[in-house]
Length: 121
Image (cartoon, rainbow, N blue to C red):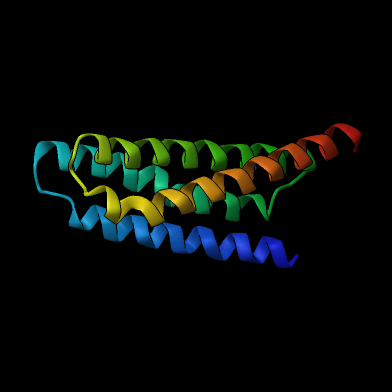
């Protein structure tokens, strides 16, 4: 239960960091387009994880976790693209990318566990 609360809090913090980053992006076509995509995926990971907590079945729980993981993967892509395109200095992104990778690993494990339980259950 503690791990779930910890992940929930970390995803909330991750979403807040994404919001701050998007607000700081240049107000160019590229900044707005990538910012829109990053804002959607980076904040919906936590929302989908939160939704999973109220899942109607084990299969539903596993599915909602899978969606949260998918959104995290997408936001990780946009973060890396911002660095690659030199829109954000790499040193500014190190902590956020690290957190993104850790959250992905945690959710991947949760998805695998949930899918295993759903098949057995």
